[in-house]
Each structure stands twice: as C-alpha cells, then as structure tokens.
Length: 441
Image (cartoon, rainbow, N blue to C red; front, side, top):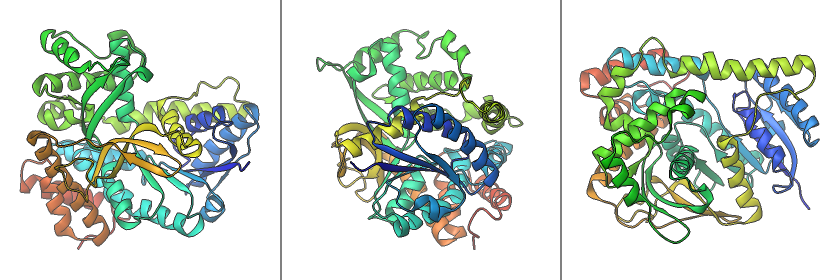
C-alpha cells in the first residue's frame, strides 16, 4: 500500500512541532511514509527540523527531514501543509502598530493589518502553489496561512484546477468552546454555519436527537448578563486574549441575537471599543514573539542540546488535529464534515456565486461537497458583500500592483472611518513593507 509524503511549508513556524506530533500519532490512519519540513529561512528550518527529527525517532520512527530546497521538498509530495508568514512576526508587529497609531484596528487578519499581511502573503502563496503544479500536481494543498479570506480568493482565481483547500481552525475551536459550555461532547453536535473567513455566524446547533440548542443558548445569554463561554479558571490557564475575545462574542450575540457570531466579528461590531482597549506599544505580535515563540523555540533548543525530546512540553492541539483530520478524510474517503473556504457556486443562494465563502463541506477522496446554506438574511448578506468587495480588491491590488485598487480596498474596510485616515495608513504600510509587497503604482 502506498505511503504518503507530507510536506510542511513554512516549517520554521512555532506550530510545526504540534502538527508533526499529530501526523505521527495518526501515522497508521494516514499511511504516513515520510515528513519533509521546508522553509526559506535556514536557521528556523534547522531549529524545528532537528527537534522534529528527534521527536519522530522517539515516537514512531517515521523519517523526518528538513530543507530549504523547494524542489527537493515538493517532488513526490502527496500533501502540502502550507503555513507561511512572510516577514515573520516582526513584520506583523508593524501591521498592528501602524493602524493603531491612527486610531484604527491593527490585527493580523482583520482591518488594515490583515490587508498588509495579504499584500505580503499573496505573491508568496501563489509562487508556492505554482511550484506545486509543476513538481507535484496531484498533491493536495491544505493552506493554513492567513489572511485566509484573501489568500483563498487569490489561489482559486489563479489556479482553479489546483487541488487546494483553504482552511481555518477558528470555527472548530469556537465549536469546541461552545460544546464545552453546553457540557456536550463536540462529536455529538452538528453546527450549521455560513460566512467568510473570520467573518461568519453559527445558525443552528443540533444534538443527536435533532434538537436545535441555539434558541436555548440565546435565551440564556440574553437573560443572564454574567454568562461567559470560557470560565475564569480556564482563562487563567491559557492566553487571556481568547477569554476577552469570547466575552466580545457573547456581547455580539446579545447585540445581534439571530445568529451566534464567530469571535472575529467583534472587531467589526465593536471596533472603537476594542481599539481603545489595545495597547499601541505592545500588540499581539509582541506577545507571540515574547511568549509563544520563546517557549516553543527554547524547548526545541533544549531538547536538541539534550539529544532527546522525552521531556518536551510541546504537544498536539486543535490546530494540528484539524488539518490532519482533513487529510485523513481525503485519504480514507470518510466524507466527514468540516468548515472550508470554497467558491460559493450556489452554496449561499443569494450571494455572489464567484466569491469564496466559508461553509460546511463534506470531504472525501474526490475533494469537497459544500452544504447548501440557502438564502441568508439581508443584514448578514450586506455585511458580507462589503467585506467581500474589500477582499476582492485587495487581491486585485496584490496581483496588479494598482495603488488605486489598494486604496479602494482600504476604504471598503469597515474599520476605516475616512479617506484621509485610510490613505495615511496605506502609505505608511506601503513604506514599511518595501521588499515584501509588490510595488504599487
């Protein structure tokens, strides 16, 4: 039976060890033959690479190699897991702080921080997908790279025949959080959902008996001001950022109680409030560099020096589980249900058919089968149409180098209050991203 070659593209990421851990745990299910770690940064590739070599030797004996040679990495690949971040978190810090200096949102996927990240990432992603079409055209490309909304538009527009799925673990993370709140195992619930990446809503939550639990959840949220999705003890054990974000999601559900919003919608519902609470001198990027990356890379270095990963604190989680679960569904034709970014083509009946949307899909060996959502309410449709216009114009700016398209995209973003503010932020981001963005004219 054929063994599968998995390649992690952007393997210098702090998320790589956890993904490798899940691949090794599921090695029989996914018929794992080898793992190749690829990154353009030799030092980052070597750090996570040496750690993962040791880990694999001690946990299943599957060959793991690392390289900066894309041809060596891609040839014979069956799956490419793509998780790139051009400019790393140092450039992300600029994306966040420049908009905040003008009093508007700085965030890696939402607002103009997301715009800036897209302008860096789209050319790099398209180069990777193009190279895959040359070297391993039958490989499945599972893209985790942000900002997924614009990247998925760029990939599906430029390479419509590529076997690419653009995925995000935020919807399933929120599903699991809601399931924990309801005290029901996640696997016993079916969530209905529609939207765009980081811009969507849960419309129903069905249990095994076919009962919709969302109305009762809505009533509880509307009648009890103390309701929290994540309890205080859990927040203390994890990054408090997510505790705050889930609190905003509850606030958003109260404000617009028809559907339960994905947490990222809070950036659009409560933009001014969230910006006021942000520290413009210490943003999320600073936290990730100072805490998450520091913990992961120091653990890698320690294990490499000791010659063993037996005492490593790094472990698998939802991020690694989700992408490997999707690969497993393809390999074993399971037709499991996942939320995927895909061309609409009627999944949402009253939304642009040539737009990428985020909806539940059944995944199998032949790809995906989107679930029909039907017609959506005017409020949600209108919000999505404006956001989709911003996303499409961002992709056009990245592909054509048009300054005018970039400016139009900026001014369509709901976090931008005026032409003057939008243009000032665009010009500063353009200057800060010289060498990363395609030049705008």
